[in-house]
Image: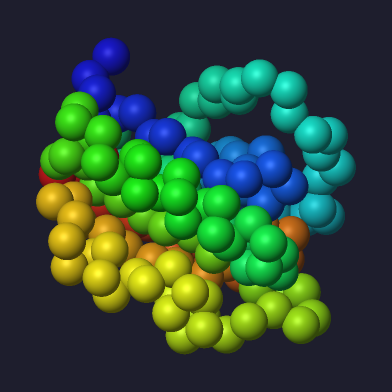
Amino acid sequence: MNSNDICLLLGATGVGKTLLLKRLQKLSLHGLEELGETPSTLPTVGTNLTDLKLKKKKFMVDSANIAQISASCIQLLSVLSAEHLHNASVLILFNKRDMPCTMSLVEIKSLFRMDDIIASATQPITTQELSARSGQGLQEVLSWLESIIVK
């Protein structure tokens, strides 16, 4: 397997990584019109290894949970500084954007100091808002993944 074909999805507990994986799998197979009801998920113990079928051939933050933003930022900095990931393309997902009382994307980016991180990182970084539950932003995530695989 080529290392360019691997996507690593990291995030703090409860941010919706498993739900995002399930939704992306269904979207890649059936399209947005057949996304359907939100599937149930259980907390993951260990690691999920999932195949995602892309037409042409992941990091997530629970933006509704302010306490997890700082933990996610530390995790992100650790990943970005890993030697073997210096050339990896990075997509930072701000999930649960459909929840009430979430901070604006500008506020979250400010807390993360995203401008500083992007300026100092060796990797190309893209940020995306989404709701894995409602499906908002899923097509954009899938399109980004497909564009990265093509490179």
